[in-house]
Length: 203
Image 1 (cartoon, one colour):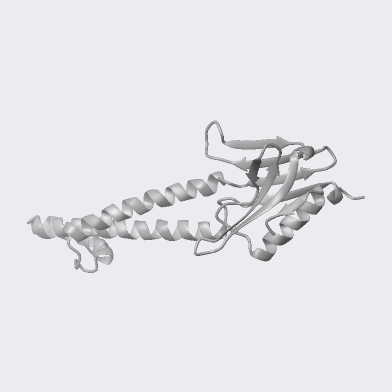
Image 2 (image 1 turned 90 degrees about the vertical axis):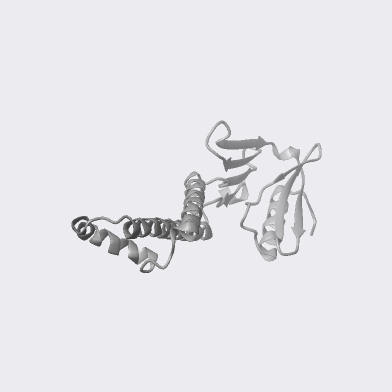
């Protein structure tokens, strides 16, 4: 018998999903555009109302034309439009940085290992930096009573596989934020129940 008959490992993607890369990039670029548009409206307003002499105005003409690119030839006033754009740009930038940190840390990523050869189940996940950066749980195969599938239909549909242990403990073993299709959840749960030789609930 080969190793696949004794060991099953399911990898969990976590935050490093293609959709997260896409939205983090879009929010970052959009927030930079908003922020520079707000700043350009402030600088354009200041240059127009400062009453500088012609020599200084000529030196700043190149800078002014650069900011006019973001400000649409001065069509946006700093108060209140420019100020709001600076605020939303800063907020979006912080959100994108937080999102990129989640991707870098791969929060929620990991794997589930079911090992018949050494008689253990290992559930590993990456968490936030700190004391619980690594979540590494071990159980013996005899602790498993069944595999339970929970399916919630609706706008925010959820399909989760639970590892049901002795003592009425249930541990979710599917990834968060990336729901599997109904066919995928049924196939994975059935394969796991057959591999562990336990009952399958919820299907």
